[in-house]
Length: 337
Image (cartoon, rainbow, N blue to C red; front, side, top):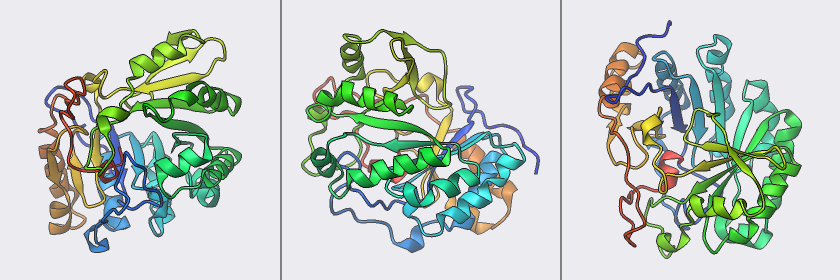
């Protein structure tokens, strides 16, 4: 099917990037993402892999050029590689420019080679510390060695790795320079992300965790010369070049700098909810039209267009008032970031 009229939101932003959560389950319990005793959705609530394929294909036929698969942890979903194998046909017909995923790295030793074979060329790996004890604390269940083996397998398979680090005050501040050096030594890009006020995370104090990336950058500049880059990856990161090493570091700043003016993305959950903005609760149910008329793309397209017409101008996360203003009740794992 040829690409139909492209998706344009009310603020004349073209929607070219779809993030798709294929599962709410994960083999870690990162403290900023979900509770330790997380209650997951009944499996019957989840879209089938075939339904996810049809939904993603519909978006691709409406001009989406970048597809990022997320979770939870996407690689723990049963038979997930059959989805990657199927959806990669859009790379072959060149309607899709990039198929990628965000992962905690725990399953990459098993799947890295297969991912490369189906056309994935880049992966983002979430890793917030290089200290074994701290890693076990922040993930609750994770083992750092398993992730490091996954990173090694990904690079050996030919995948370009970018490390995503959530900036957490009092947790990984003292690792700023060691993480930068570690990534540079291994030829990996690095992106720092501000922690976002999402979900009821029991005893975790979100205001106390917040570490502004403006402050982080100023600390980096005590040792390095940073030059702003015009390069964009299709997502919200803004990049700098470290002149002394040549490496690239990204900053994702939903709090200290809203990147809404250039927002080109929407998020699809594993139950078919379409969130037009990470920082707003507005959503559209695409599972209903999908199941009302299975395989009827024109029917689904109308629902997608109606949803995009409601995409807000931006979000409002703000810690400066010393309360979690703009907090989302859903967990980060619900939309995969």
